[in-house]
Length: 339
Image 1 (cartoon, one colour):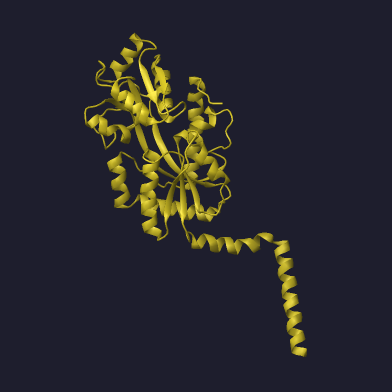
Image 2 (cartoon, one colour):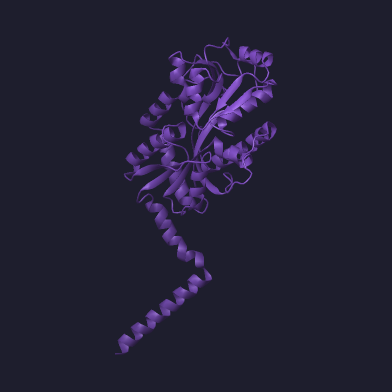
């Protein structure tokens, strides 16, 4: 009986001590489970949210990365398309998602542009997320309908200046990276080019091929098949260097615009309160995937450039803040806005 009493008293003492310890140091009670959760990540399906419809560059990159991560981890990485409002629907969904390491957002240049473009935006891509890693970049390419008497960038500038407000430049929508590339071109060349927005690249491409519009600054992977088939004429890529996927297409820098350097970028974001240890594990998994022959082959075929090392969360955060600032200036000077 006395032994049982001593055992009960000891249990009460331990309980009191434990309660007092966690009351004084509440973080200690959470640290062990959090560390254990991060160490076991991933333990279930991971969802990658894309703000655009299937088939676009963002979706292509997300599915390629998801495929390799699934093979590497043994757990499914699934792409989910939540489209609308120039990718804002998907971004807002992930902002509100549980910060458990199983929901991520595949963002892009558009999210940096949207920060200034939209009058009422419910998220800040530079402040409301944990930035995980850059996934890749692609140059845009200036292409024209081959029926136009335009064969290079200087021809394009001369034509625009001799036909002010008549040369048209299509885009996938007001404020898109495609649209802003055209606006930056207009600023740097002092030309008056008429912007024609469409609901996505598909309809814009249909009209460009049909001659209803004259030109577009589109992602290289999207336009390369039409250029190679002779259906469109490529004048220049917007990146600082020529693309390995299209080495015969000069850069705009080579063509007389020394300060022109634009790439469409794609990166991974997590809800803001996600455990940094999980973010680090995802970053390591991504960099391992980007080093595989399989993913590099897909990227090369699609004209996607690998991110520069070390591709850390801190490096990506600095990059995103710079992009928000850079595009804010272009958006303001263009006068574009969405209420």
